[in-house]
Every structure is written in C-alpha cells, then in structure tokens.
Image (cartoon, rainbow, N blue to C red; front, top):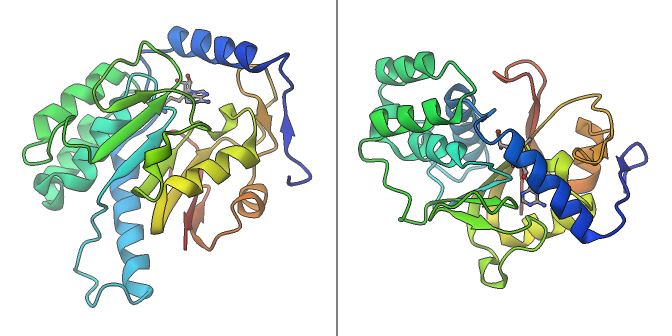
Amino acid sequence: MPENLKVHEYKDRQEYVDIQVARSRKKFDYCKVYLRDILRYRELIAWDYYRDGRSRSLRTTWRPGRILCLGVRSGAENDLFRLGFFSPLMRLGPLAQLAVRLDSTNNAHDKIRLARRFGLGAGGRNDGRVLGVEINPDAARTDIHVGSFDELPADWTGRFDLLFTNSFDHSMDPARTVAEWKRVAAPGAYAIVAFSLGQEQSDHDPVAGLSFQALSDLWGAPVVFATDLYNRNGYREICFRLE
Ligand SMILES: C[S@@+](CC[C@H](N)C(=O)[O-])C[C@H]1O[C@@H](n2cnc3c(N)ncnc32)[C@H](O)[C@@H]1O
C-alpha cells in the first residue's frame, strides 16, 4: 500500500456497510458528476486511442462497449455517461454545449431529466451498455447492481471498456478494490478516478491521503491524463489505461 494512504479501521464489514448506506441515504438526491467532464473524458480518451495506434484517424471516435460506474448513489451518473458517450446528439457541438450549460446543479433529478431530454439515440437503462454499482439498496434501477464494489459478480471478468468512480475514498480496502476493478476491465480499458485532495479520514470517507502518486502506485498502470484544474466539482482526476 502507498505510504501516505490511510484507511479507517472498522469493527467489521457490517459496520462499514451500515455506515456507507446511512450516509448515501442522507445525500441520495445529490450527484457530483457533470456532463461537461464526461465529454472531456470522451475527447481525451479518443486522443489516447489514436496516439496508441488503435485508430487510424483522430476523427474516429472511441466508443466503449460497456461502461461501469462505481458508487453511483441514485444512478444519475449512469444516465449522464450514456448521454455523453452514446447519444449522437452529443456529437453535435452546439447541442452538446447547450446540454453542458443546462447541467448546472448537483441535483440528481435535474441530471436525469436532462439526460432524458437530450438522450435521443443513446439507448436505455436496459441495454446493458452503462451499469452502476451501489452499496445502498435504495438504488433500485435496472442498470444498477446493488452490492459492494470490491465484490463484483464473478461473470463480469473482462467485461468493461471504461470504469469511472468518484467514490474510491469510500473503499474499505483500496488494494482489494483496485484488484477487483482490474478484474472486470477488458484488455485496453480505461479507468478514471476522480478524488478530493487533502480529505480528512472519517468513518464515512475511510480513505485519506489520495494523490496522483498514491493512485498511480496502487494501480501500477500507464497514466493517460492527470488533472487538477478542470473538474466542474473540483475533483482531481487520473485516468489509467489497463493492459
Ligand atoms: C461520494 S458518494 C458519490 C455518489 C455519486 N457518484 C455522486 O457523484 O454523487 C459515494 C457513494 O458510494 C457508495 N459506496 C460506498 N462504498 C461502496 C461500496 N463498497 N460499494 C459500492 N458503493 C459504495 C455510497 O453508498 C455512496 O452512494
């Protein structure tokens, strides 16, 4: 484990689960993911894909087969990822800009409505292209697997081309969590971790000391981008390419 990483110790697994669920319930109507950031991920990954020689033209857009979001609360980010990566409308500059402008609050219901409004051709919650994982059983949607993100279904091995989380600081065991996420990633998949710098350790945010270096040491994978400037919610972001 990276030296500066600190992880809160729980009495047992049940205590961890109970605290996470109670906290998620309290903030259930929030979503800290913004369409603007998702469209930026789409562009940056397309560039890496080209640079890596996996597409012949920079104009060939990279399209993941399946996306997995980890720690999604009510699941609004599933809808935003579906919109950003799969809606043909989000390939049209002015419409994408309008949608980005309208995505102006951290209210999950607003985001779900926005995704519905602009999501023509993006597919739906039942098509299996975007899945979320959430420990809070209130997250009852067909595109959410209710369970812990460090114990994913056995038949998910190698299934996802893009992983996203802003909930890594909620992990009970960071090394185990990374191993599990790598297991479900397809060869050549991308993994994006958005995190807050300098976060205090607590029973609901058990991981403290996250940094680009700590995450890079934990993941041991090539970094596609790492930025502390652009996230709409103020997160740091690091993206890995998983071989
Ligand atoms: C900081 S919130 C982020 C929610 C959402 N991504 C957003 O942007 O609003 C963390 C979420 O991760 C969930 N969570 C915590 N530990 C988890 C685990 N082990 N497995 C799955 N979900 C977990 C919590 O219940 C909570 O809903």
